[in-house]
Image (cartoon, rainbow, N blue to C red; front, top):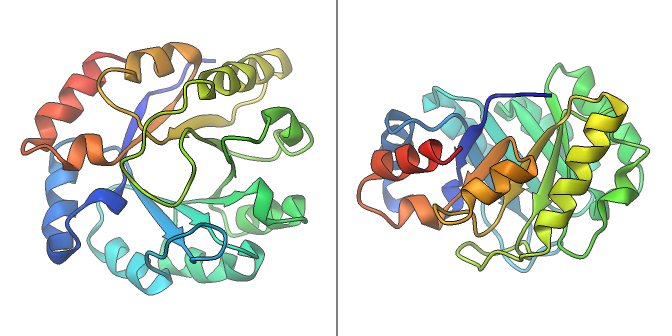
Length: 219
């Protein structure tokens, strides 16, 4: 299965004092979507923002919003983030004991439903949900903070998902988040990644377009 490769800058690494400018700049630089990390301080050791900020971002976004819920009991918040404007809504395998029900709920609203796994979780645990999801997000760092180093054995999980998808004729997208940069994006693309979440590797540079262009040339 061939799909367009997408670059999703993570706003976790943006300058929140000038968030509207950052969003406009990265969209003009060629972002395919915006990745929004929602953290509750319980499931992960950090807090970011909630549905109100997602709604504000939606009001100026010209590309889809890829909302990643790193929160406990995500099933209670599905409608809030759908209403706020999530185009893709991803919840963690580790945070929801009724994952099939939650994925079904997201899709009922006509949005793309994703499932994410932490670095220590084997993708084979997703076997009975893969036929229902639109996206699988592989965390290649321990979730909670931006700017971490890529965990190398994440590549094995990406390959497993790619081979499973091909073997069973499925069409879910494979996304990777954590430590993605110009040096490893080609390797990740060859392993089977469709969506590349990049935070500090984009927002730490002065020229967002130049970084995104170089990343895209490697795909």
